[in-house]
Length: 272
Image (cartoon, rainbow, N blue to C red; front, side, top):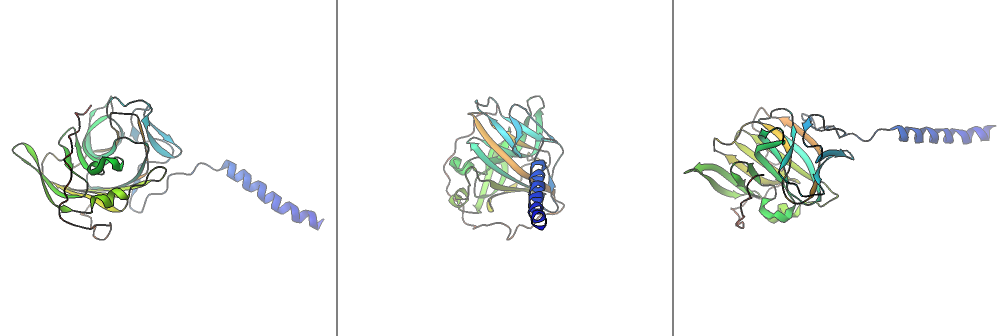
């Protein structure tokens, strides 16, 4: 009798464990850091709108892409308006392509899920100084390239860029990139006319936009750029609204230096 009871106890516990594992739901998106609000629940696209043929939730992450060439740039747009904020997200490419995270943007075509405005560029490192650059979609195009500490203004109707230094060696930032299946961390801080990009802990862009054309608020959106077939994924998207200029000293890795010589880059083709 005693022997049989001793054998049943662990078997019963094992049965309950198996049942519990089978009934357990899929892991949810991790809780946002203190002070931050999560923009993705890890299960649905609630709060977002975009082309369902191109955007979905797969295995707990936002998946964007197509096995066919993308005919025109399209976006997954988040509801709400954001002005001064700190944004955190992770991304990875399954098939290389061109993506981005729009900030302070405006919707220009609701039917096509099309937006214009600032973009934190999300691309593989093969695109060199376009990696993590600050781009002005349907506007001034490339306004701050990788590693630049730069002031942006306008002179005689043209974009004027005054580069005062570099925030890190270009190759140091590019070398931090993690190929699939690993994830890359991205931080975007926007306060007033200053915008900062950080990738995998390395300060990547520090820009001050003195041009009145630079928006001070707007929507957030994920981009699939037009071109070849591609697939990109996002997760851990969280934002904190800022009421005062953030102190970033000591938060991110940086080796400040003089302006770096960067190769001349061709302008992107017109927005489609």
